[in-house]
Structure formats: structure tokens, C-alpha cells
Image 1: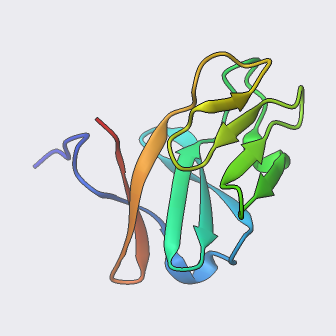
Image 2 (image 1 turned 180 degrees about the vertical axis):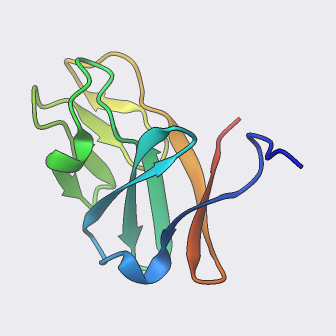
Length: 110
């Protein structure tokens, strides 16, 4: 049976995550940035919507739940993908994330 986009998709082993450190992985045919924050796992698309820079090369601020683009300084929420500071004007895609059987699983938000 083919997987639906709403299904949970394994993305990375939970024990590969280090608290507060961004980890790039692949899911749904795109790069995804996954960050562990205590018991919470946050996941967003890994490309800045301004000019496509890889966000895993930027600065992750776990207390504020943000990632800063390394190219032009746009700041995105790791919780919902919204732009907190430009020059980007479009949000990045956010994913629901959970740990199940030792794997971080993701699904796109509706």
C-alpha cells in the first residue's frame, strides 16, 4: 500500500539527535531540519524561502525555537515555520514530529 502524505514517515533515529543541535535529514523528497529541545522534537523544511540557502548551516536558537538563515539573516520559527524577521516574506514548511520506536517520525501539517 502506498504511503499517504498524512502518514507518519520515519526520518532519523532519535538517538542521533543532540539536544539543541540541528540535524539535516530527508523526508518527503526534501531536506528537513530536525531539532531536539528536551522532550520535544521540532522539524521544518531545510531551505530558506528567500533564496534557498540551507538552514542547517545557519544558527539554531533552541530557547527561542528559531533558526537563522546563513545567507541573509532571515529568522524562522522552528515551531510553525513563520518568518520572525526578513528579508524572507514566506514561511517555511513545518512538520509534526514524534518519537516512535526509537525513530523520529514526521508528517506534513495540514
